[in-house]
Amino acid sequence: MPTANLDKLLALVDPGRLALEIEQPNHLAREQYHLKRMIAHDFDEFLSLAVDYYRHHASQVMGRNNIRDEEAYGEVRRILDSSHQGGLQTAYVAARTGINGGMPAVLNSIRDAFIQEAEEQYFNHAFSTCVNEMDDEEVERLMQQYIQRNRAFLGQQQAEIRARQLARNARDIIRAHVAYAKKVRSQWHL
Image (tube, rainbow, N blue to C red; front, top):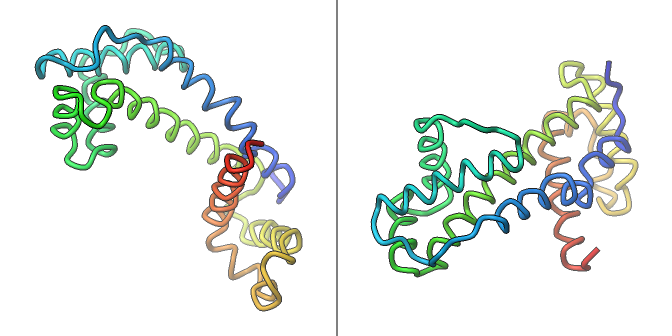
């Protein structure tokens, strides 16, 4: 049964740990997939390459083999619709013409979606491991720990915010904290 533990939660979602456990394996899977050319000649080749890469990535990173055609196509479509303004059509134009990075950039967007989804699942698991979200008092204790730890950064007025007020948005606050830590880490090359 979890008890509010900010130190454990922040250790679990530390950007260095996320890089090691999530980002690196995903980048390696992308690196291992070689394209013969930067552009796709037609829509069938574009779709074939995108689906083939999706299967490769899922196999390498998650050990998922034998993904059905419908599932692979559906996931590729979902990813490209959400990662490209204009959806699948915009991704296809980039892959066919070579603009905006061509086919490699399309595959990179699929990789990035894998990373984003894995980080979200990892965060949800870490959060649930460290705090029982159904226990309002426990979430409030977590936010009290957060206020205490960050009092110097919050300023006097913000530091006086009651933990109960922050508890409603605990997930988002910790998520924002991690995003900021990632940004600092990348700027300082830590």
